[in-house]
Length: 373
Image 1 (spheres, rainbow, N blue to C red):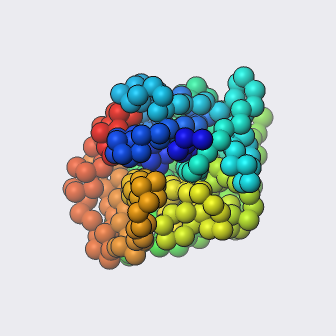
Image 2 (image 1 turned 60 degrees about the horizontal axis):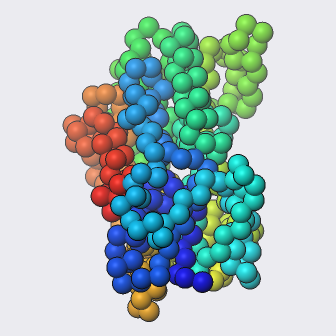
Image 3 (image 1 turned 45 degrees about the horizontal axis):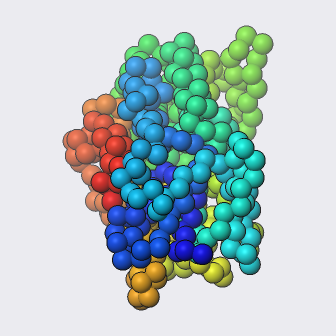
């Protein structure tokens, strides 16, 4: 078999690995072939989903783009794109079973990259749907209409996604009753107090009602279409739209259990190789080494591609360092933001100009054509 690298997943991490190998490694490893496998034919820029749920803010063409055209620049025999989902891995035979619309396909590999990402809990547009890009669009459009019609909205979870979604809604709609419910003692729990306090103040300035130290323990759709939410303190509230942002599930059901932790993340070593596995690697939302953020997925994909390059050339691997200062930027509507770099609070204006103006949608074509890598 030629040097066949199978990349499972075609989002931030998977595209980075595939393009990097074809751009840089193929020149020296002449028999290299990259097989990219994903359940969708388009990349969904889900980083912008928090703004896209607001009708009229994000056109589909800004957040969805066809994947295949970006690989036409490479020799035809060096790349294959299979639209489907991995269902199992034959470790001994080095085969991946892939479910496609035309039936099952068994794809051999010399090296396998798992970059299948994660999915939202429930049918919500925060992540790409495993049913494909049309399903993702359908979900997004449905929630745009629900947001437009609702007079009251409850967002559950005050992590980055919940906080950004709440701020986008409150920025756009001054006449809707918007409530943010969090189990933490503050929004963006775990970040420095200067960051959480700023976010809390900005949300309250936009008339958001914040319920802290509170979980939603039950939800029931009533006959009139509203949703009754049961809170952990025993209270019940009724809302026209319920938007939970809590919890994501790694797309790793096909991975042997021995390679996963209790949460379902793939356990990797310092080189991003899957521990106790032969010639299998992983990056992005599926790994256990860093938070599920686009920045880390991009860094991991570059490091993984470099190590694959080195191993294919018989060179020594390089350690992927995860001990840098934690960094995160959180938008707060379309004019402000907050975040951290280490223990330093990021200035609101910087977050707005770097991330808030576009939510990095200008990078979408670069991920497709590989110029980002």
